[in-house]
Image (cartoon, rainbow, N blue to C red; front, side):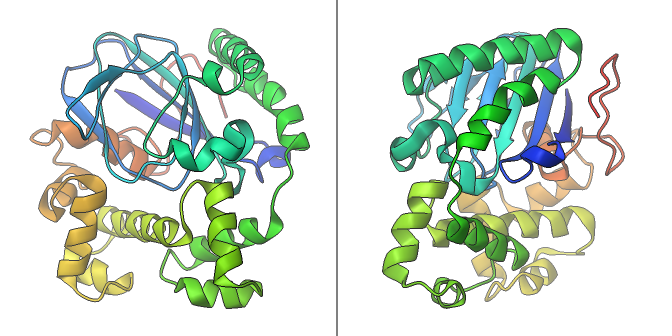
Length: 294
């Protein structure tokens, strides 16, 4: 399995967080896990589409071109053939780029892009294939530019996201509203419509991601990491970890710190947390192949 991320060009950074690629020509059949990060994604599965194991125990094959809406729990995926996925991770305040007013109703789903916007889906599919053929993300950037340029960003929501990101989710929503100069009744529905999550849900996801980064990078144990990120106690942090990731703190720490031999189902989760391939030096973002996506 090989996972890597690439930053958006400067003119797209308000709209797109990154582009990522996942390749595995001979994947295992282990169920892999990824965790919510507060971002929606445009996905192109150019290999064999992955199968999603849903919370209701149903198993569904992903669509080749789909929109991954906000998730409020772990996403369990299984390869059934060669994997080649390209994802465009949207900035949270741009989550409605394709879904529009339907965004909030799509939580915990990944619908076929064609059901949201057929013309957009066709263009995105062609651009993804062109990017793959050229080993260059530029066709996707060119395709996205006119849509991003035409998208009306809600500046208050964009600022709300930035404030929650800067606080790593450790911020009361009432304080957020006060800082923005709006009422809670204005902030909450506006945030949900633009981001696809409530402000409180988004804050919890950002705190979760910060906690995972600390467990990966430096903190010696869950109690120290929990205290650093504003959890009232270790039990509270453990509850959030289990709810949002489906794994115990001990399993997460083993996976994030490199003991992946006995935690195969967490290899992809560790890669997404780190922003690069599992087992690759931290911070390196280059795929070891003929690609030149930098």
